[in-house]
Image 1 (cartoon, rainbow, N blue to C red):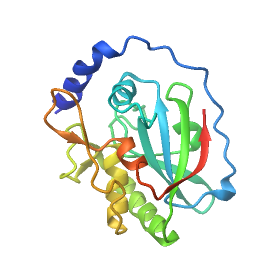
Image 2 (image 1 turned 90 degrees about the vertical axis):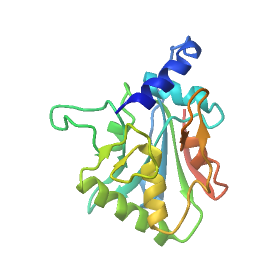
Image 3 (image 1 turned 120 degrees about the horizontal axis):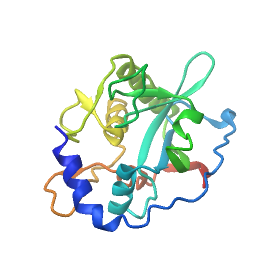
Length: 202
């Protein structure tokens, strides 16, 4: 069911008058500074992204993923609606390169943060994210944090860090006008004082 997402879009439709976006930034990162479990934030250009941004103007980000590595390359694992293709026709957890995650039609800004804690915590979170990707977990259009069978973007980050023993959101939740449900938004994670900035791109 997509009733919650539709309702949220309806509530904020009147606020989304200016849809112009700034020219794309160039997301270039020195990969030698990365660790598995680092958290990547994205400001998107879609309608759904602008809905999230309208709800939380302070963080400036509408989407989030977790960084993982295989034997050769760095990847971003994330859960996002609407980004399907012929190879992946269903909305499932995705694993993408940085260039895919920050493709021109998807991003106008981005950042990488690291939780200031034992590096093994980030490693554990990343390994759990890999397992969820391999299980092909579907996107959660009900935005229900209590149901881990499907996941939305911030729920994925919350879940993998909770598996590693950390409540990354520290209990923070957000709400939308006229919507009874509480949601976990990127700003609820970014407000964690232990998140340290590695890179900011605009």
